[in-house]
Amino acid sequence: MESKQKKESFNDWVRGFYDDKAKNYTRGDYEKFRWFASKKKKRQYYQTTRSLLFHLRNVNFKTCLDIGCGPGTWTFLLLKKYPSSKFTCLDISKEMLTQFKSRVNEKRINFVVSAFTDFKTKEKYDFIFASRSIDYMENKSLVIKKMYDLLNSGGKGIIVTSPPHPTFIKIKKFLGKKLNKQHTQRISVKKMNKLLQEVGFKNIEFSPILFTDSLPEFLNKFLFNLFYKKRWNLISKMFASGYLVKFEKN
Image 1: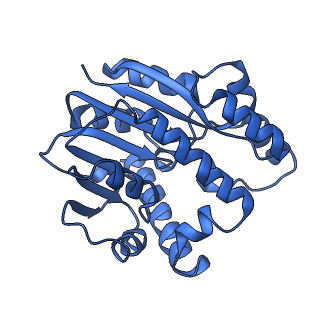
Image 2: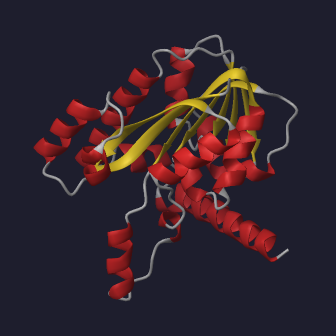
Image 3: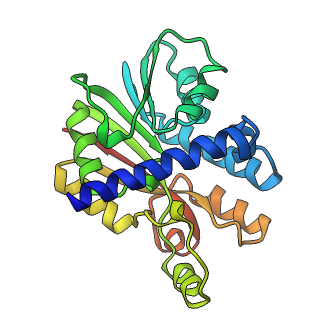
């Protein structure tokens, strides 16, 4: 009972955080704030787009579950690439979906306001996509198991997320600084791989999707161009600030 209350309270925090941030802090345009408010953010958007298009090149589907779609930033990319496919777009924040709905007129989208762990459906999907939403889910094993159960046989999935940075966290704790809650639930490549294998996913592949902004800009771009098409490696482990993992249900 205690763990359930903890999950619910964290979900409530995530919901409130994004409802408020999306509506007030970003003045009703979260996408502009997150991806286009600076040169650095525009570069992150451009790199993420390039990476997603590359890794989607062999993916085909008729139905997609987009978990934590936000204002639709990456869903629009999927809508354009797959013009005849149907989408279920799920987000815990009502405000995020309100912003998404205001920018699109697509009968092939079903919008659902819900935390993923609370999402109930009898439908199964050909493709599951989750960009940076798993960062805000506490019970990762439950999340991965639910993804497996919701995929059709032969279905594929892509998760985009950020690895934890233990050194950074230790420094903040040592200095007595408060950790932002949105940075406390990240998952490492090693642990993600273990969870995906345990539920039965196959053809699991990890790649870097973004490199740390602490690098000089020219080096950031150089590393991205060199490695975003390649598997996760030592350079990725040292310098990547985000990763993409592909997997398949046999």
